[in-house]
Length: 285
Image (cartoon, rainbow, N blue to C red):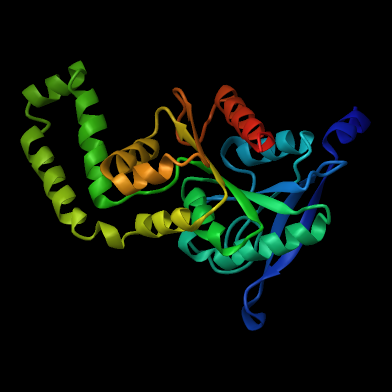
């Protein structure tokens, strides 16, 4: 059985590599899923935080093995301060050097590699997209429920999706009748938040994300959960902006929606759909 597994999937290697300035270097840990005959296109999985290389429900591990079985080498790693990597903990806005270090190690470890797709979930997706224009070897992006939260966007999404759904639920009306829920004050607060936040929204990270995706010339695959607030925030962002709609309408972009899925695609069926969508997209160009 072990020989059959190796013939199909190749093997996995644990990699240690350095990141950061010489006086402040940290050693990062990555796992390389290496097919027996690697394709020239690979996948670098950029984790969100707080998260490590296996992913929720081992999603990243399982995805890497599925893609490796199709011939795509895959590297998943812990950035500084996460999992088994050294260094101080940081958020997704401060991992550009970590991604660079992982790319250096990836190309060094797989001589056949010519280009890479960055794959990320939530803020890992946003970090991957912001990094993509910096390296011409990055040919594509797979972005699952990209993190685009802003106070205004959250307020709009909550109004349209949470409260409208609550209006048809009996327990909502029971709480309202019993005085345990102040609808008017809650709605007024949300409207005020949306109005105030809209004044500074252009300064928020989603503006950086837009500019990065606008500069990126590779292919983009967006995968959205059917039952996730973050995915609805992405939808609202696209609806609210002509510039975002034009960007998302590019022939280089593809969007896939996994009906009923939660934020981390927790079921085997949802993960299988993600794996299928990624494999089909990777093989289509």
